[in-house]
Amino acid sequence: MTYSFYLGPQKPRFTPSGWDDIVSATADGILDETHWVELKKTLPPKGAGANTELARDLASLSVDGGVFVIGIEDNHGKPGAVIGANTEGFISRLDATAKSTVTPPLTITTTTIPHPTDPELAVLVVTVPASAGAPHMVDNKYWGRGDEGKRPLSDIEVRRLLAFRQERADGFENRLKCVGEAIGIEPGQQRGSYLQILVEPSSAPCGTNVTEALDETHPLEFFTSALKTRLQWSPSLHSLNYKMPHPDGFAAKSFGNEEFDDADKLLVLMGDDGSWRAVSGAPVQPLGSSRDLSNGRPVFRAIPLLELTHSIFASVAYLSTHHVPLNTEWQVGIHLSGLRGVYPVEQHTPRYFGDFSAFPRDEYLRAATTTTDEMSQDPASVVDRLTRPLLRSMSIDRHYLPYEEITDIGNRKQSVDC
Image (cartoon, rainbow, N blue to C red):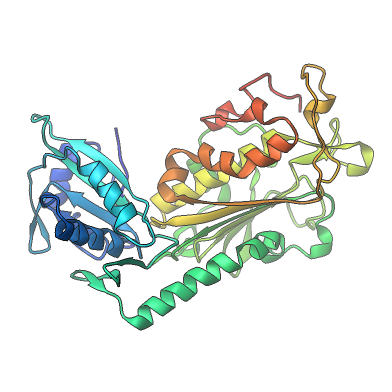
């Protein structure tokens, strides 16, 4: 199995496939102890003092994200021998420390890379994403990192970080409702029902930004690499044929020079601040084949919503893993308008039986938090958290949720006629 770890903004993601790659990385200086990497030979015996020190290590990494590696000797900031450690009980201890000794509680993930010949030994890599709740406190002090490891943060640093986090959290719903305007659509051009998606990181990228990373890349080239699966519905990320100059980052659209006044279009903006914005009219379309809303009763189609949302999250993870390293927590949200009285297409499809419901309000808005790792490994879970209440309100959730892979969308039961 291949793993992927964030080691800092100036380094590519570290993707060891096993023990030998860990050994090579230490010899090549890839795992030097830095602002984003903490090395330990093993964990000290349990005790209040030892757990407090462990909590400080974890909290310090939560500001900008990084890894805490156990099983490698620390040779004055340089990795020594890869010896492995007897990690029995370590995972539960780390998780308990992150949740009970760190304030607010911290979310971490762990990866075990076993020793090739000794089943009792392993290297344990603890991933700490940049946290939306950072800075985190341990023993009445806020912790961050410098070039030589963890350190208490000054009052000025704490105030700056808290103000940044609060600003991001407070304005999220308003920014979500204004995605189209932020990309560049005139408010009057968004008629009918539209889907807007917003994805924002808890920390901004360091070093190379999106515009620089993708400057010579065509949108289709990027999204074909990010999403190798053929998508069912159009417009999709594979419909983004046109690069669109934008002051805030890398933007693409599925249409030419005409204005965005047609629901069958898609715009995506990948911001230099790490955020992603997308707007599309695909989920609500007239019954039948016409895209003219005046030519048929509008119906809600779950497949375009699930597929586009899933593919956006998978692409965010791909960019953050391959081009602009960003290991962080993310706030994500979807907003749909023009839904009042709209039934799901299943209401008009004979193969589906049951009492389906029209959506009772004009708008649906849902936000959630996730991490780079979750969007990379399990974007379907993020999609589920955002869309289940909407699908449940129309009595169609059982037809689509849960699912595992993007190719499963619409195949859990008999798929809906498009």
